[in-house]
Length: 76
Image 1 (tube, rainbow, N blue to C red):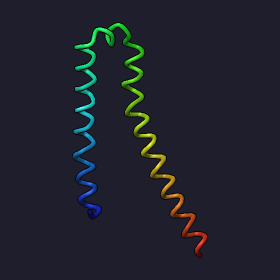
Image 2 (tube, rainbow, N blue to C red):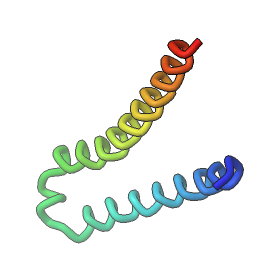
Image 3 (cartoon, helix red, strand yellow):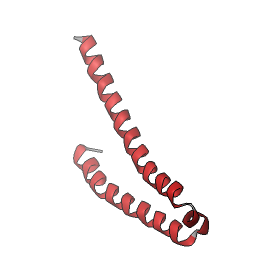
Image 4 (spheres, rainbow, N blue to C red):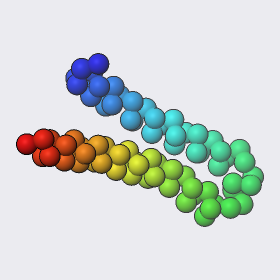
């Protein structure tokens, strides 16, 4: 898969996943009485899931780039 295809997939997939996630979170809040009784807990959970996913992805990509940079530095 070339860079342009990956970028196009990324541009389309991220907003679509965000819409699905928000829709599912709203549906859970509407249909579950337990979630409505504990809004702070589940609000925090709904906030942390995308944040943790983004942080994990960012750190993994950063570590991979750093490892490649260090490998090239050691070779030279």
